[in-house]
Image 1 (cartoon, rainbow, N blue to C red):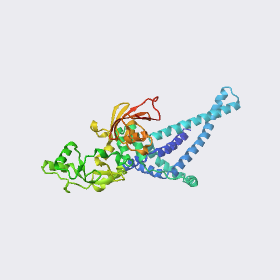
Image 2: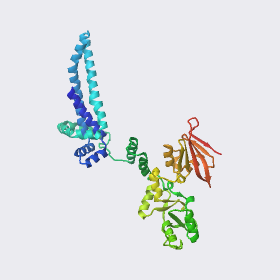
Image 3: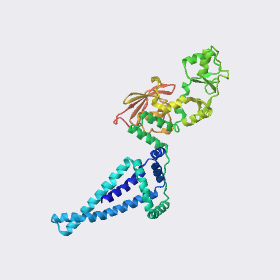
Image 4: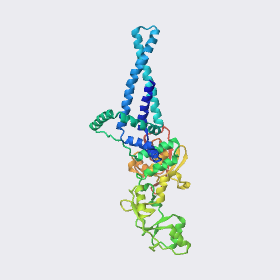
Length: 433
């Protein structure tokens, strides 16, 4: 009985450890020179024969365990019941039932539950220990393995099921691993958020990171030297678009370093000088941040003007804007430049231009209503109110109250978000004033 339980436990460990072994961890061990990890990966690619041997072993041992257990224990338990003054028929029945219960319990506990839980905790280490003995078993039982494997392959073809394990790693897999690492403490929460932000580059449009049209500091090409110097002092930026009269007629851009160099050398500044004005990259507002990064790399630039389908300028974006989206909270912004300011545990002051993805992350909201119709918090307010919001307009949704605090020329500057109690919360509540 002891030998059969050990043998059954071996097959249980072999089964669960192979199934639970992580491909990435095995590849790492193989790169470190462990040949057993390579064997385990090869078995994972074609596990049919391996699991066939496991099932042959487990079923054969279970049947033998029942026979041995009944033969070894039934007489003892029958004698015990006879000693307790039961008649012969009742003693044999009770002895058989008790031997069946004891045998089954021993196999469940020591040949199934314990080894499988052990295999789940250390799958790669155990899989590498049992892979060579299992290969020996596969050679010994090769005729039986061939028969059962061909029969199983026929069933897979009959039901049109895949016969090979799919080891492709998706972005969802990586994000899930990063989240698990953050929960276990192996990865800092902010580092896990950076990884999530990287994958968001393929879904977030450039408008979520751009400087909006009304906040762009630009030069007209015919502006005099004195005006340019005053503009630099009043609005110090690294790059300025240069326009022919109005902002929608961008002809290039000028780098602040070139302007500063001329100022320091006491040279006049004239934007009519083609040597000073550089060619500007113009991109549509429907591009994702990942596509904008590709454009930057192709033209070796770090500044772009964004236009809509009507060729109107809607904003500008820099490489720093995109990287700030990726780095998130790891970058320390001045307080007056933060888009989301947490006032306390239940309230936030949020800029209307904040992307909805950042709002969801700050408020721990999984989904926003009508999310395909807007990209910013201001857009959310407009869609929910069905008009241009006014000061003190509120929307209550998902356990939060969104109140417009400041509107500047139809643009929502600030929104106060407060957590509301369950009694006050309704699915959607809109207050117009």
